[in-house]
Image (tube, rainbow, N blue to C red; front, top):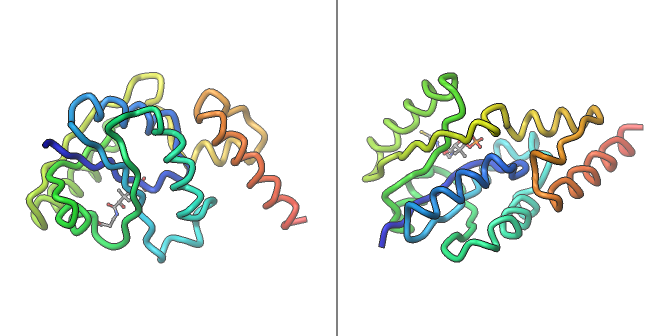
Length: 166
Ligand code: PNS
């Protein structure tokens, strides 16, 4: 059984993430989308771990071989605990490469895991959750960049934040 993990913060999940998950699901028998829930970063998130998990579960519900999990601590510990030997990462541009290479090498020094890079589809090469949040916050249209139910929750959360700030 070839099992892989697609790790990330997914705050929130975008169509770019789902493109990588879909392509990983063709390459591996089983794919676990793993949400990093380290508490040190919790205050900088727009969505809680549970909310991110709910959105991801809905987003991958159409794939027969994809599941969603949360992990705290090192990704390699999660891999060891779940008998996973492949980490799948999307590469958007050369600017992603330096950091991703460093993480891949660190991860393979910590556990028996290989990192597999999948080039992001060109239509998503500019896409990042942080930009989606910023554009949506200033009223821009992000409807082509996230699934419809994420768009709805994003609008609701930003409206809540605006109400709390006023
Ligand atoms: O979506 P992101 O924010 O780029 O995801 C980053 C993530 C969660 C994949 C990365 O920060 C991670 O693997 N965190 C777990 C902690 C860890 O293992 N750190 C060492 C990395 S070499």
